[in-house]
Image (tube, rainbow, N blue to C red; front, side):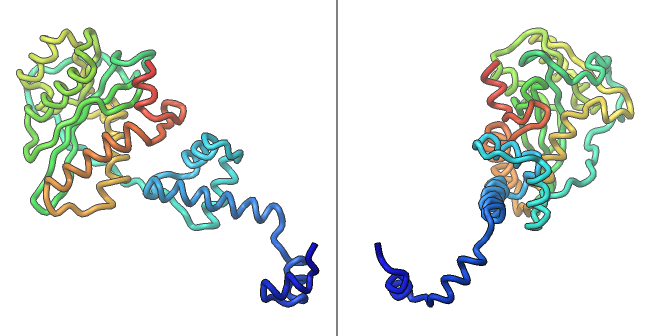
Length: 273
């Protein structure tokens, strides 16, 4: 056993300094908060500031770190950590056409008991220095996974058809799936309706002027824009395309916890079904 004098000499500290530290060292609660703060900050940065207290709490629990949502929210407030703020969603497609439309089969029932029972689709636009890049997606309402997507410089029928064909291919061409969209002209086009009929799908469309009829798709676009688009400036459409691809396939489907599926990731639910 070494003497205190020898230890202080080796560590180059004074005896009085050691006794001061002994009397003023952080409490167990303070040390626990410091450790928790480090874990919170790691998760916050790993998800590029996209996670707020609810999702960070779920991540901590998954790592076997006991904590409450209230405590995580309080620690984040102390550290000045906030999830990137949501901005108002802007509708891209509109019902300015006289083409035939499907009735509203979905009727805002976004619940499903299995994959490929209900899909929803929509289009949004992404600003780049070269002009708009348009993105069409298809989401499975059970897993909330993006199962089909297409991007292009034109907002046309081919865009939504390509997204739907990707979804069909990925999900091995299921039959009887409800495919819901808004009243955009692209979704009423003959080519799109032929794909619906040829694959024995059930077309469904939002009512005129009711954006909430397609709320899940619009919610995805809000998330995409808040967590990715608004945080970046894209000099070209190709740079935006690569960024969105990485977000959808490398992050959203595989890593991002989704509150509607009990804070699991879409891929976990999709492939477990």
